[in-house]
Image (cartoon, rainbow, N blue to C red):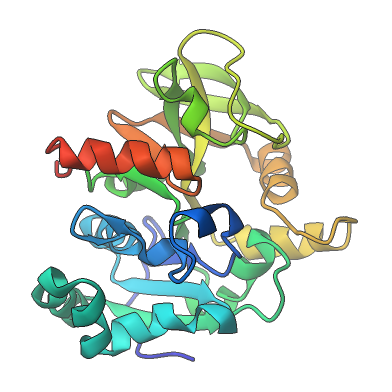
Length: 288
């Protein structure tokens, strides 16, 4: 279902759409709250997904595409129903109204839980050959916002896909899923060429070396992304169509950059990472 969309000209240099894949089951977070999806769990005084949307708006992106499932209809209701917003997060009603007056929202429904690349593919007909920003809403940049604005500048300059990098260290390794493992080659300060994406493993992140950088679920892709999703779809034998084969093919044929963000990206898709992020917020480090 499309709520509303803006009519504007695309100059092709920066993303004009933010895609938020939010149809996943989120089973790891049921121990935190069995009733709400992880996207609506509180981070400070507001739900996690609002930080994601504010990243887009901060980067000048006002077309927001949220991919949900029928089981997560409450996410759409949260944005369309002031009473529900007031019930869950009474402090943010004015903030949400301001966001709704600034941005246009599209809610699309993934029919089956077939993975994030399948979910992202639903946005093809809306994005009309524009570069797109993608944020997995369990990747939360702090202090917020600012990550997407930086990546947008990198994409505009280099015209290559760019993915956020964040450091893994002794303080956060046990709070991060063992995903986002990449081999990197330095290009300039904080900018790297990604040489290889490694498969996700079970458990938590085990750094291969001190101050290892991991790729996060925050990035910008060129308008060819959807072509690569369809190219790759037929070669995936697993039921879950993740972004790994798509990213790998783009890397091989076009190259991909990684940028080490100045802040921290928290993995709030697991209870340990969620707890660490909320503690960070409670210490007063929320905003840039």
